[in-house]
Image (cartoon, rainbow, N blue to C red; front, side, top):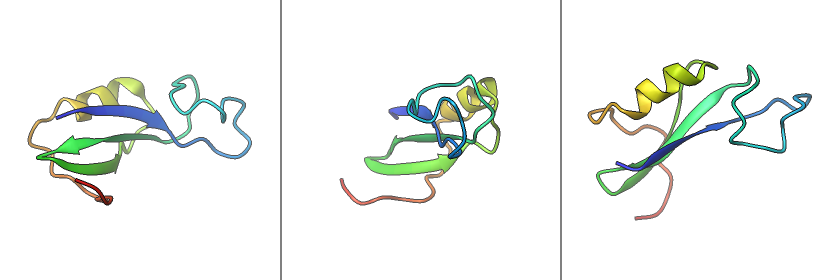
Length: 69
């Protein structure tokens, strides 16, 4: 499973140009592949340590599937 954490910044966030910036309280998301299918899932937390836990869950079912693969 390949995945990464990114941030969906609000329009007034000073870090809005950097989707990999973790220094704000904007919502964090996890995107990657699980069983050769792409997924994007809300981390349900703006905290980086919580997202890392979600990324490491090998049995996490993919949600919000996107095309491809």
